[in-house]
Amino acid sequence: MDHDPEHIMAKIIIILIACSFGVMMLWVGFTQHARQRRLLREAMPVEAVILESGVSGSKSADTDPRLLRSTSTSSYTPLIRFKYRVQGIAYESAMLYPTIIERGYPSADAAQAEVRGFPAGATVQAFVDPAQPDKAFLKRQEGAGPVVFVIVGLLVPVLGAVLSRWA
Image (cartoon, rainbow, N blue to C red):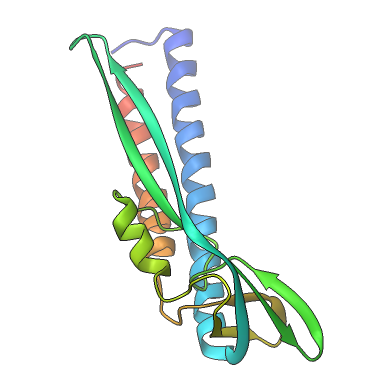
């Protein structure tokens, strides 16, 4: 076992970074889960007009020097923006689900399916918590995003501890 102060400090830093990231992920997961449940419980229907509906795509490149080639991964996100009124005050929202955690999809078709029922210009039903009228959403269903953040938040410190053994 190596007791060199530099190695010990490297291990401590790795564990601290992993724990900090884990705490952040847990906080986001738990707060978004609580918020999502409250929004679903308190939400009232409101008439909304779709201002924008589409899909945003992005690519990430990964080069593996061992394979001497690059690969890319595509991800697609549904885009939606709508306006609505609560007690005579106009608001806009871009939330499809009752959480700020966006869902990504491996294909443009899958992302497009999420917004298919919400074409630009359409009048639709949205849901809004009267206590937070600026947080309206279109689909009244619970998403798995907050739970994923909690799971990652629990696993990252464990991974950091394992990785610190090789520091």
